[in-house]
Length: 100
Length: 181
Length: 87
Image (cartoon, rainbow over all chains, first blue to last red; front, side):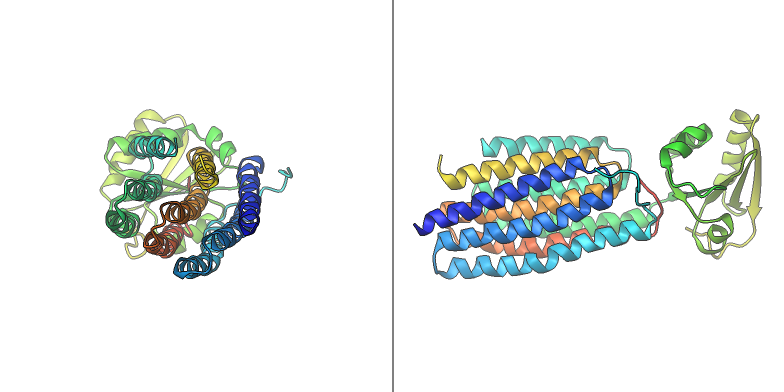
């Protein structure tokens, strides 16, 4: 029963990441792509890691997985922000006409 | 099946990193290459090698390559157009001599780095570190370069031989503090 | 093929799809975005591998990745900053 919940969470996370990959190709503007990537990657990572914690039970490995999740939750938005800041300071123009 | 996908990914990344023309792109490709290769080490049951690959290949090598790229003789060309137009493909189609100049510099074992700037030419001349600054107005092309730079004579001869029909004015700046890139 | 192995296969397919974006990407920031996404997906793959093989020391490798991928991404992003529309 508890395994079914974990499988459901992992499947939801896989669907999230599939949407993120589709968004990487569908959007024509760089800033739309980086928006999609930042949000979808973080939410998908959180969901799939919660699924793994449920699957591995209450143990030492589960604590390590939670620590990894905490690290990635902090560093992934920061690195995406660094990329977007670098692109914006370098003068990468926002393309106004490319609404999807 | 999963192993095969990762191994094919490794081969594709190595080929692309070898065949790319810009060194910055090769650094990014090699970063992805070392990430995937250390996962392959994990798949074959060698976690200690994987940790060493992650530390050395993914971080220290990236830092070393970036420092080496700074030290390498990068010939940075600032390109400023009179209109404030950000569309890169338009500029590229409109200036075929820029591609020829890039090919000439590659032949001279330099690495040209063309920067399409939207700022005015005075800002570039004052603040940026440049080797050549090109200002493209409607009729004329103004090229600014440092007077002590020995490459500028070769560039001048090349432009005089191959693009004599364009109105190219080459101006040698005197100051050497700002543009020793 | 169990559920977790299928998940690993699906993530491998995602990595190849993001790799297409990395190869096609018109500017270098698209490639950096792909590097970031691939790094996150590799961390997921390591966690799945450690659950499949019941070896919890593989999680240390994932922890090292989570920190070092961040450092390399930020370093490359700072290096190419303020250089105009480079490709």
